[in-house]
Image: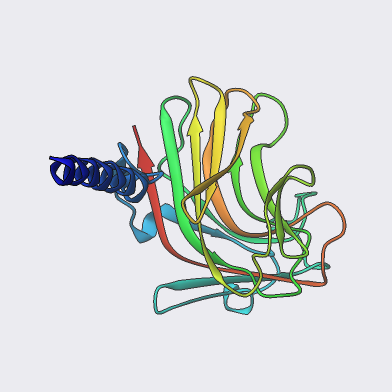
Length: 217
C-alpha cells in the first residue's frame, strides 16, 4: 500500500511538472494573433536624400542591413530630422486594435545613440515609441532600461501595441521586458533600421534585421 501511494505521488508530480513545462514552452508573444502578409511593396525605404540607397543599405540572403553616419543629411531636403536609414512599413497604418511587430535584430559593437525600432504617430509629438541602443543596452527613448548586453548577437524583438488600452509591451527573445502607456491616438505605423538619436550618437550606426513579421488581433 505504501508503495502504491508513493507511485501516485510520483505520477502527480510528473503531471504537474509536465503541465508547467508545456505552459512555459507554449507561451509566445504571438499567441492569439493573426499574421498580416507582407510583400516588398510594404517596405518603404528612407535614407539620406543626397546619397544613393546602395551606400546606406544592403539586402542579401534575407538580411536587411542599415547604416548611417552622424553627419548625414535627413531623408528629405526640407526636413529638420536626424539622419536615418529605415524601413517604414506602409499599407498597414492603424488607429485601433492590437498590432504586433516582430523581427530579429543585430547591432554591431560601437553603434550607440540610435533608434532601431519605433512606432510613428501620436496625439502629441512624432512617435509613440522609440527603442534605442546606448552602449549595447536598449532603452525606451533615453530613459527606461529595457534590455542589456545586446551587441554582436541576434536577438528577437516583439512590440505589441494595444491601442484600445493605450499600452505598449516590449519583448526581447520572447521575454516581456517593458510595458508603457502609449502617446495617445494617431496615424500609427512601425519603422525599423537606424535613426540617429538627438544626442550622444556614435559617428557610425548600424543595425541588421531579418524575419520581419506583422500581426494583429
